[in-house]
Length: 469
Image (tube, rainbow, N blue to C red):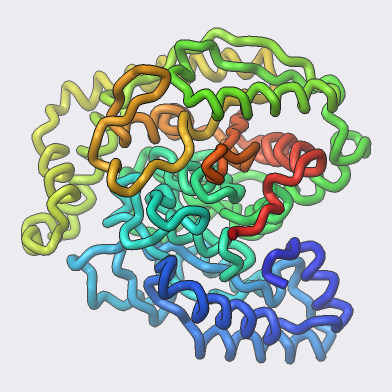
C-alpha cells in the first residue's frame, strides 16, 4: 500500500477500504524488514505512530476527515524537531537532546492528519552530500545523496508514503535524483524553518520528498504558509498546487503543456555531463515537446561553488557559535564538519559581502531569463549516484576531473542562491541500474507550475513507478 499514491490512499481511507492503522503497521513492518540494511531511520516512533493512527481512525468514525494526508505515514529528517523525540542532527554534539516542541512543519503535518512515523538520517548538521550510514536502495555500495538521504531512501524503499527534508545547496534534490524519487525545494521562505536546526539562514529551505510530483504537491500544500516565528517566512495565499495539477491551467487538464515555454541552460552551465544523464535529459525534452511545450535555449552563467561556500560557511559557523556548540563541544563534531565550520570563521566579511553581491547579480540574471520562459529544464545531477568509496575523491565526467562534492552541488546550488522553486524527479536509469534525475526550476512562488510540469512528465512515463530490486 505504501507505493500507492496519496490520492489513492486518501480515497481508500475515506471509503473505509483501508485504515490509518493498517498503513502505519505496514510501514513499521517495512522498516523492520529493510532498515537494518538501508539505515534510513535514526528514530522509529512506533508507539506514537500507532497511537496517532488510532486517533485518526476515531476521527474518521466521527466523520471528521482532515484531508488527503489523514492517516498517511510521513518521515521527518533529523534536523527537524518532533516534540518529545531526540533531535540529533546526525551529530554527537546533540546526541542526547530531546525536542521540547514540534517544528512548524511538523505542526502543519499533524494538523492535516499526517502520522509521523520516525526521524531519518542526515549528514552531520546537513553539511554534506552523503548521509552515513544510509545506503542507496538501488545499489547498497553507492551513495544515497545528502544531506536528506535518509528521507529519500525511506520513500524509495516504501517505508513511508512521503518525507520531509531540508535543502541548502541541493539536499532534497540530490538524494531524490540518487534514489529515484521526487523532491521539491520550494521558494525561499515559503515553508517555515522554525524548529529546524539551521545550516545557512539565507540558503535553507524545507520541502517534501515522495514518489511523485502529485504526492509532493499534497504535502507541500499542507506545510506551506506564513509563520511569524520564522523571520524569513513570507506571506501569501494558501497553496493550491495539488488542485492545479488535477485541473491544469484554465481547466485544460494536467497533461496540457500546450504553449508552455521551457528553457534549456547552455552547455557551459550544465557541462560536463555523464553521457547517460545527457541522453536522458534530451529524451525528456522531446517528451515535453510532444506534450505541446515550446523549447528554447537560454543564456545563463553558472555561479561558482566558491560563491556558495563563502555565504554558506560563515552563516553555518555563526549559527553554531551563537548556540555555544562550537566553543563548548568542538571535540564532539566529526572532522569534516568541524573543519568546514572553522573555515567559515576565517572568511572575511568583505569576501562574504562580495559573494552576496555575486549572488544578487546571478539572481537578477536568472529572474530576467524566467521572464522569457516559464521554467528551466536541466539535469538534477551530472552523474548517477557514485560509489561510497569515491565520495572524498575526484571523479571523471566526460574526460574532466572534478571533486565528487563539487559535481553533486553545481547543478542544484544556483537555485538555492536565487531562492527559486525547483523539483527533481527520475527520468531514466543508467545501464548499471541507478536512477537518473531531471530538474525543473520556476519563478518565485510558482511551485504549481514546476510540479505540473513534473506531473505531466510522470503521466507520460513510468520511471517514478519503478520498485527497488
